[in-house]
Length: 395
Figure 1 (tube, rainbow, N blue to C red):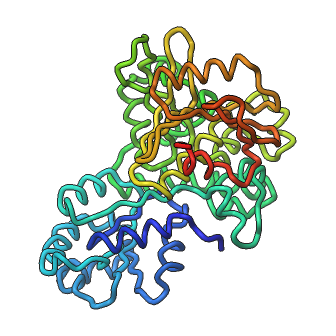
Figure 2: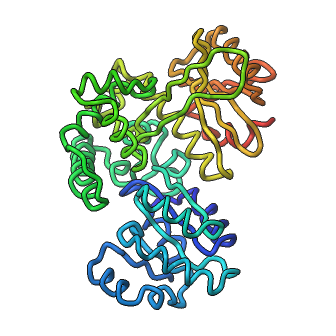
């Protein structure tokens, strides 16, 4: 299978903390990642009833196994284990790399781990595949393959659209009917499916809970709760507006987008590249794909990146503002193959407004080049995308 860029960050954090928690959506490759990285370490599936019964009898003894790291999969299934974990960690508080926890983005897990093991745990967010990862093993996928199929490993390897659609349909059914129930989260399955369809049609646009609630026939409080569930499960990304004290009136609504392009195309019934390029939703899909690729790469290669979008009430905007320890960058995404001078001028203004170090125009053409001293045009087709944006933004 493909090599995951997050592996180096995982190893780095294990050398720094006693515990590391890998969080991500179901079927994103968490277990595969840790088994590839640590093939000799035992991996315990905590959803196993017999194992849960064993842990309940003597949780601290179970955690005192000598294998390092001890891999605990689906840690949210046994929340009481967090207290025992703190006790065992404190017995040898200077010993790092002891426990590797895997979780399917449970809000209770994140909160419990942060409070119980504060200062003793690091976090790795494992996103779906990025394009550079899909060139490391068979099948080698092109950037357009990843765009159409998405980054979940199983559907990414399926060229047949019907097979991918069957996988995504089963995935969403399992998520709503099993995973949320096990987590003690009550939802109405038809409403969750309806919300996902609405989110697909408003993909990359500003969030308006009242408007969506009115269309769905429920309160905006309910819609916001469902959105929080999808965000916590890493199925959607809520991109907040840039909020720094600039001398312009800024938009206050967040943008909401489906994180995986394959899931988006399933919901929109877009099975292949020809259908996508002839769809009125092509530009929205391309924007979401490019923004996700940049953010995912930043998560793998830098510490605590922060992401926003920028828009003034007068209409000046950038699809992504990304801040890393090295720099702040502004990115505008355009699917077309020609760059209008007005796009460059507006991005220059965003760089001025936000104090960004540089700006990038990510587009669907083939050439990459500097267009002004502060703005570079970068092809999404390039093997340097999105690494160039994240790693060389402070040039």
